[in-house]
Length: 83
Image 1 (cartoon, rainbow, N blue to C red):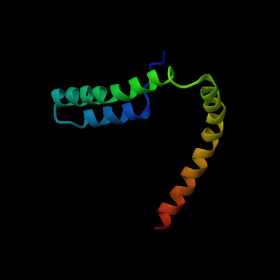
Image 2 (cartoon, rainbow, N blue to C red; image 1 turned 45 degrees about the vertical axis):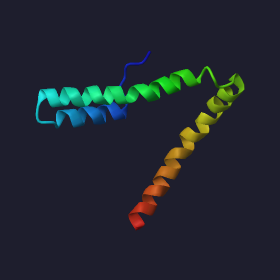
Image 3 (spheres, one colour; image 1 turned 90 degrees about the vertical axis):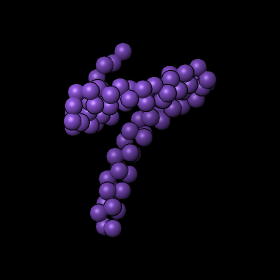
């Protein structure tokens, strides 16, 4: 189990800290947590419905996407700057 927060949690914490009071910040974080529950359930339960062969294929392909996503992201940033 990993308890290191992702970037979305840090973004939510910044949004909660920018609220005007403690109660507003607490409700902001509570709603953020409630909003993540459906997707966390889908991801955790999807492993039971996906075949072993498909999971191994996804695992093998994840390295390639890990390397190619920054390339596409930097290229998209160049396109946005030109517009």
